[in-house]
Length: 146
Image (cartoon, rainbow, N blue to C red; front, side, top):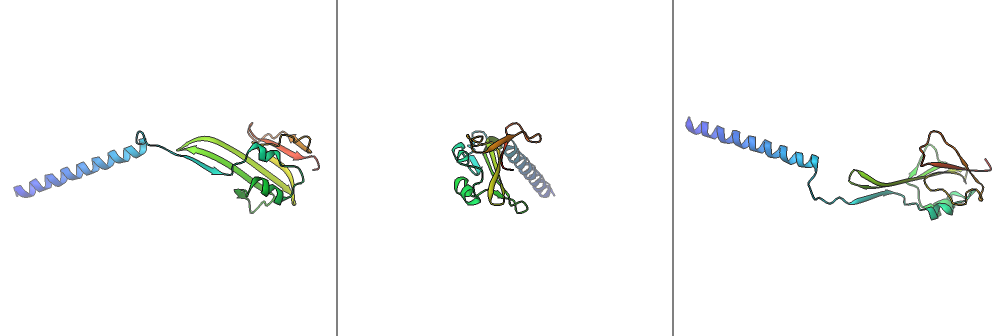
């Protein structure tokens, strides 16, 4: 009987240590290990101001795709809209983010929305409109034709 009691104590102690160890390790995952390097992760399309400056009203979809690249989001329900989002993160912290949306009328470039606007948009026939439901960093430009 004494051997059984001694064995029971050992397994109880072993279980208690196991539960404590698991709890401590899971707490490290919640808080984070000190000194662990987190890499910068870039997702989306990298669009520069130089690329946006090349856009002109009336450009074809093919020309826009040549300048900006393949859009990350092509909405199957609204094929006249292409989105070019970009996010750079380090862990959970967002270091940089930008967005550019081009909208077509048929096959011709009609509007540009987002963070990068063509520098000469007034000279090229683009007009800047105020949009109430969009945050301050977003500007919308439209072709003066429509």
